[in-house]
Length: 108
Image (cartoon, rainbow, N blue to C red):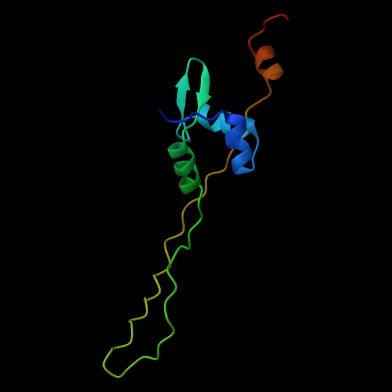
């Protein structure tokens, strides 16, 4: 039987507040187990939460190499032609509620 951790224990391990853990579970953004009305977390849940919030580099580091004569240089992307001007729409504010109520002749 896996050990079930309370949100306070998970928060202490993660270094955040118990409110954050409960809120994320309520919104179903992190994995959890529900026992009655209480949120409980297993060790697998904790590992998955950590993996979900892990930051990784966007692109792996490439080794600095000198281009050799056998590899052709990479083609440079051509600049895109300027796009046609998009017509802008002028926004108008709606009248305040008081003005609209007076418009219909109702007495307040």
